Image (cartoon, rainbow, N blue to C red; front, side, top):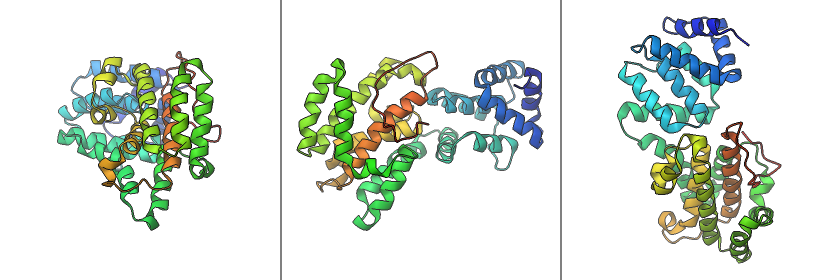
Length: 305
């Protein structure tokens, strides 16, 4: 592991531009020593409160940990100090190297929203993929759902989506074996058997929101913030894939609002299963190392993070 003095020197060099070796050192430190990196960034902020780069990099570190509200606050601080995100700079290359492509674009939208003092860009990045699938012509829906499932859960087996009702029944059966989920399982099973998908989605959404309140501290939020917030406000403070999963559940539970009384597309059950799986995957991805949960709704065939 890199020495603290070398990391500090590398961070300070970003103001003037840095060489390839320094950028490699900082990438590795972010990935291998994330807690130390956050501590060093705070140390630099305290040493020079007028320098914006440490605030921007702390925002990046907080984004990677799923702390979206705190990330937004650090971006605000960086911008107040005059930070400008420019392409092909060391800071830009660092952000691009540390985030998967979808998350990199999402982090950019957070930056733009803070810059413009609004939240429209990020809301569109969460809601638009779902709305585009729901409203696409039949010949385009296959491509739209593939893109949406890849966003929800990269690497998820195509069989999960193609066998949506079967996968949902498997998840519910697995869940209902736990006494605390038995009543919920008993309510969902007949809805799936009768293909009453929107009603099943509403019960699944209720369960995931209940669990989200239990996971609140994973994301730097309080249980009260989860339970008292309107859904749109809540989703803006959650990691991208988790937010999209919850919006899928919401959209499928209230299809009339988006479809103008048209029936749900036939592949909707597969998307519901993908969103259900993705929610618990993402919660596990951001779970602190000292916290253990056992909700066991994920598929063995899906990659976790």
